Amino acid sequence: RLLRLLRFFRSMRLLRAFRFFRGLRMLLYSVVSSFLPLFWTLVFLLVTVFIFVAVSLQGSTEHFLLAPEHDPAADLMRKHFAGVADAWLSHFAAISSGVSWWHLFDALWQCHPIYGLVFVVYMLLMVLCILNIMTGVFVSDAMEMTQANKEFQAQREVEKRRQLFQ
Image 1 (cartoon, one colour):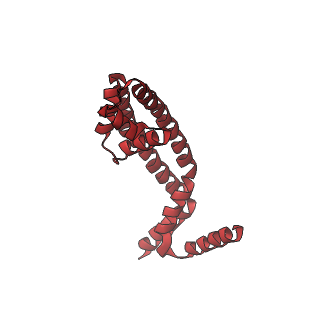
Image 2: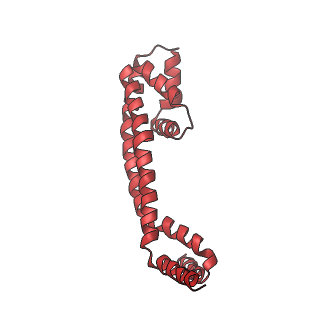
Image 3: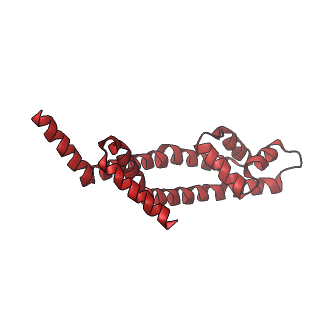
């Protein structure tokens, strides 16, 4: 495996020689250099979602214990909040448009209005704040890393000089 990795990096050095691959190199450099911010972003997202999943599971558990046998709200809750994995998937689907957030809100609202409002706060926080800010951070980091790369700056200078002398 290590030899394969070394061969890959050796082939990446060959890409430097060709001006044709400059855009590809810039893209690969940006992706590789954004692994650490990606890691911390995922940790932050997982912690945030975990907090709201715990609240939703608390509400669904209370509703399961108190609901009559053939309660339609309990059936909806079992579909989306039967366990930790289902709740995680439901919360992820809500922010990624996999499931309409209204269905999850309705299920939690029938459980208790407080749980419905907490879910609305979750949606507002995730969609309007956290995900947009994280997108901005990644774009900003990618731009800074591209600007800071001396190799790309040197190539730009060479191209400017060629254009000047033509």
